Length: 77
Image (tube, rainbow, N blue to C red; front, side, top):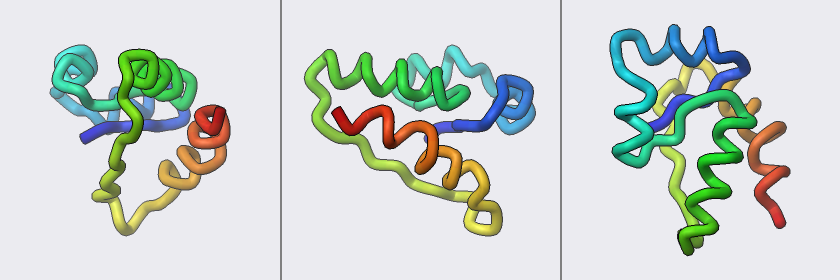
């Protein structure tokens, strides 16, 4: 599971009581687009060749569009 949102405030709101650091330690991608790119780049540097995203908020694709616009293009290389 992961949470990617436009701002850190939005990330915190989506996480509620859950700890971003704890979730990251378990492999979740958490943060702003810039933070997500950094986490995914670090995984690639460790040899990870792919990740699977599962979108659970089917009634709100705003952040999915954010990922498509601001995260994926920066990972193409």
